[in-house]
Length: 100
Image (cartoon, rainbow, N blue to C red):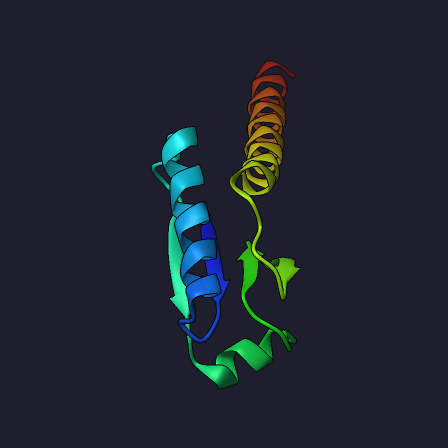
């Protein structure tokens, strides 16, 4: 999973990046990467007009404000649970295909 922090490098953008990094540490998510995007053209490609912004997967979660650690934690926990459920269904499908 990739988290993108979009911003110019201002203190607010740095704080959002810090909050994302701290959340990843707290949740012990080793397969999550953070990309820090400062290129204005790339930021505009996302449709973001105010920074900082946080993108998880392909979804813009916030723009123009700093998401708290608890907010980011909630979004990531939801995605992790959803992924676990999807993996379980895939395993069940494989199991039943082998049986029938």
